[in-house]
Length: 160
Image 1: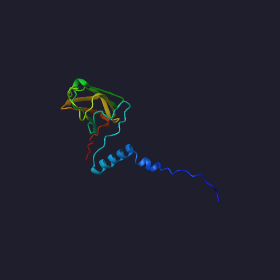
Image 2: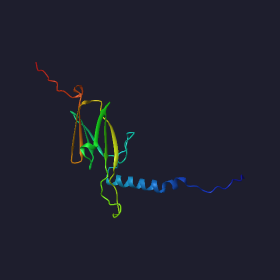
Image 3: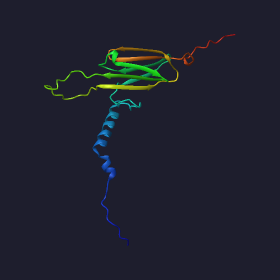
Image 4: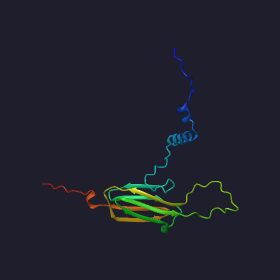
């Protein structure tokens, strides 16, 4: 009979399972999935931040359209550039004087302030020379046209 040294039992898996950070994140993910709520997308650009504006990108027959939610910004606070099929939206949301720091008591602060940058890869079919941007009611709409060779074209069929 071999003599073994006694070791206190360790339950790293169970401990990790109920770690407060991991537990609540998993609970939130399960809750979102159950109700079909969208979670925030992972930020992929090098300078992108999680508190940047939400962006939708749609490719159509004629081009690509990008919508960015930028409430509280002015047109002069937004800068657009496109290079090598990467659209970059930069801006800065300045803090408003909502709270009088001496008298008021802030209960919840969910809006974000500061500078942001979103870099979005666009399809190879877009033409960087055909770009237009429109800003209305806190929504930035950027339309990029497609190159002529990538647009679908109708081919007539001759009958003989």
